[in-house]
Image (cartoon, rainbow, N blue to C red; front, side):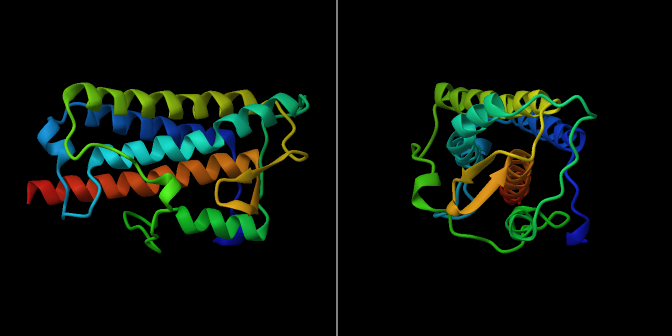
Length: 193
């Protein structure tokens, strides 16, 4: 499977729309549900969303700068095949069905710094920040469709050990968000129990 990873903006946009919609429906949940932790040290739904906004923020300016430096392409929208190492990094994030393989400890810089319980205003702020971040990612993918993708790389938030071409950065962020969407589903089903 891994050798066949081909990235396209259409596929990424479709999955991002699905994520944005899924998070939009979470707004209907009451604050008790959104504040629920499966156990004492676990994140609640809002902290997961805040973590996703923090992760995106680490790429925001880099993506913007790279897009502004890419040449316009007069071909069809890009199709991109990640190289081995980056494919490995991306696949490490991608959920397998509705499971999260390789559970990882979050680095301090990505941890949400939030209150123990959220007021309604704080809840709205978390949703707004998420929607703004991932709508901007969507806008960046749309803009990228008529750019040449091969000659500009950005350093990942993991550090210089991983340098992404833009399609890989987009894919990494989407897989990372899809992985945490599964975590959100797990948190919500533990609340029902």
